[in-house]
Structure formats: C-alpha cells, structure tokens
Image 1 (cartoon, rainbow, N blue to C red):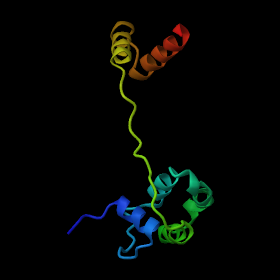
Image 2 (image 1 turned 90 degrees about the vertical axis):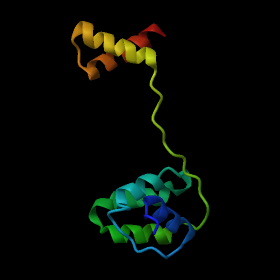
Image 3 (image 1 turned 60 degrees about the vertical axis):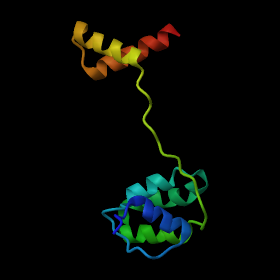
Image 4 (image 1 turned 135 degrees about the horizontal axis):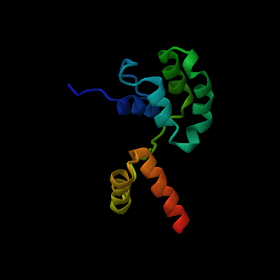
Length: 118
C-alpha cells in the first residue's frame, strides 16, 4: 500500500477527490496553508484562513480549503535552497579561525563586506 503524503492531500483539494480520510499528522494546517500560499491565485482564500488558523480545528481548516479552492490543475514550484558560494564559505571559515567569530557573526560580516565592495 502506498504511503500517504501531504501532496496526496493537496491533490485531493485541487481535484475534489474524496478517497482519503483527513489525517492532521500527515497534512497539518500549517503545512497546507504554506503550500497553498505558493499559488498567487489562492492567496485571498489562504489569507482569510491564515488569520483564524490557530483558533480552529484542523478538520475545519481542511474542509474550508476543500470547499473554497476551485477545482483545477495547479503548478506549485518546489522551493529549493540557495546554492552555497564556495568563495563566501571559505571567507566565513577564515574569519572564524583568525578572528574567533561565531558562524553567524562571520556570515553577517562577509555579507556586509560584499555589499561594501559593490
């Protein structure tokens, strides 16, 4: 049997399928809201629920999205981590070793120096 994921619940909302029982452990309201907010056409619907999200039961939130989001195919891009610049990483490590700065302080200093150089 196939393992149910968050994306199965999103597809269920998009295509109005009703073959899955809602499970708040798999598709918690925060994750649903986060993924639905990536589609700019759904922002007004998601924004209304976002204000009330912490006061409602997860099943109610799921039902709201089920009925309010229009049926249709949607493309939601997968958000990827920014690639790490090896030059910046090397400068951060040098600052940590030579000046005894923390990682956070070193990154902030390197960003500041890069802005000043431009």
